[in-house]
Image 1 (cartoon, rainbow, N blue to C red):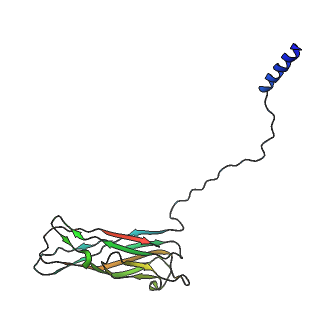
Image 2: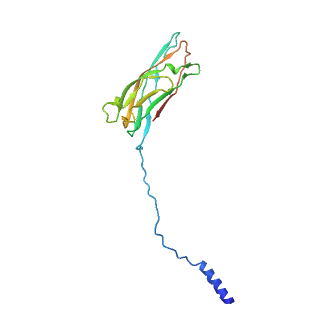
Image 3: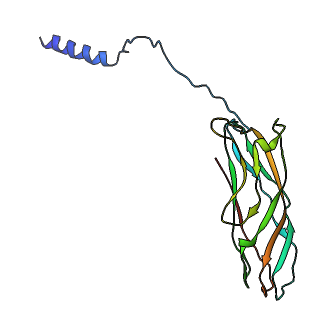
Length: 186
C-alpha cells in the first residue's frame, strides 16, 4: 500500500509539470491605425485679426481726434455650412505710465469683405458691422435662420478702416496701449 501511495503521489506530482491540453484559440483581435493631418472637416477658427495703429497727436486744451489705420484683416475659417458664427471684440482703455485714454470713444468701420466661398452675394451670408467700443459688440457674423440656413463654408475675410479715438484735453504725453481681444463663437 505504501508503494501504491508513493506511486500515486509521484504520478500526481509529475502531472503538475505536464503541459495542459487546451482548446485551440479560434478568435483574436488586432489594431488598425490611420493618421489624418491637416484641418478638421468640422473646423471653425479665427486665423487672423487686424491691429490698430494711430498717428501721433499733439495734446491740446481741447478735444483731439487721433486717426489711424488698421493693417491686416479679420480671417474666419468655417468648414461646415451649418455653423452659425460671430466675432466680437473687447478693448481695454489705452494706458501709459502717465495717464489713460478711455476706449469708449474708439470707432472704426468695415472695409471690404471677400471669401473663398462660391457665394456670389456675400451680403446674403455675412454681416460686417461698424464698431463703437461698447463692451464686446458683435463685429462680424454669419447670418441665417435655423429654418433657412445661409451659413457658408469657406474662408471669410473682412478689412476695417478709419479708426478714430477722442483724446481729452491736456492728456499727458506718452505711449498709450490697449489690448484688443477678438472672440469667435458659435
